Length: 113
Length: 110
Image 1 (cartoon, each protein chain N blue to C red):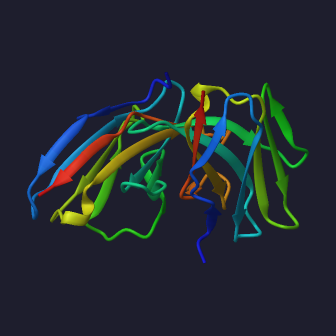
Image 2 (image 1 turned 180 degrees about the vertical axis):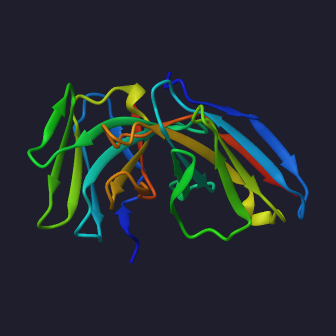
Image 3 (image 1 turned 90 degrees about the vertical axis):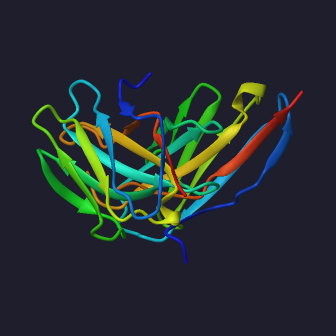
């Protein structure tokens, strides 16, 4: 196991609602990246946090936002949920200054109805 | 054109077979390359990093061709447990985002 944990495991929300997903990084890792994986596709990069600041962002609208805390854990917030936001949300942790290998948590499966 | 392209498969092979996957990437400045393995409804797991000189880990061999911008993965002596989706991954900027291909599905049959 990677030591990366995510909560909750599954979530069902209604269109227009807001959701917060959480991630605890592997011990010793200082960087957290978030990805969205739709069914049958590869993960798509949302953004990355390093030392509590956003350090890169993919092609996602501003209603996708995040935080990183001093203990390197992280949150992903999505406002005004849309049906297309239904996906597996993956968090990956890494140690930026040593290796760029990223290790994934088990993911949160979000369903928007 | 997608940034990272893979043949989606599926590749159906018998146990013991050798199978190879290729992947092409569009950003010539890409710096790091990886193969991840993903089982159904699970998270991707790092299989191996890919180095310019090529590298081997047991039955798995990865090669990188920067001039042609493609990456390959060779699996020898396939096992039933190798059945999974294999994701080709490129890091276009050091420490930044990973760009995933769509994955190649492998099914190893008895």
